[in-house]
Length: 125
Image (cartoon, rainbow, N blue to C red; front, side, top):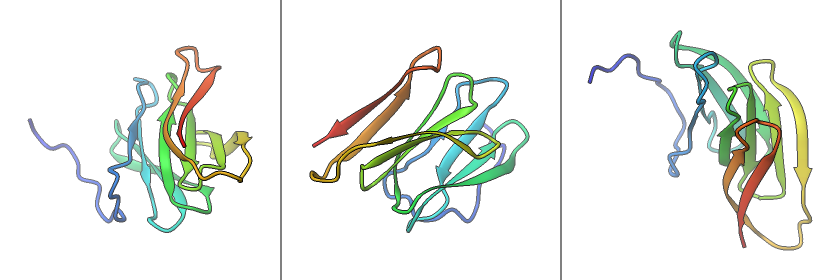
């Protein structure tokens, strides 16, 4: 295998959190842009350049997931209280899902349905 490109100057990412869009038309990689706040870097894997940055959460990221079309990105932070869905690369927040803050949870996985209209999350209590 030949290395095509190296993304440099990424923050510490101990969980190895990243997500590759399954779309051929919108082939993006999402990864944390900061280890202190929930910033998401979007990288165009076809044209090998940075696409945009999304300020998704105040706390560091815990999970990322792309829709099948590669136009929607779901994010969750370490706090586990809010899940947000963004339109990419426009950086527009489309949806926000909130839960109560009485119990501490970890969001371990996010997923869209194949049609991209239904969203699911897996929470560890």
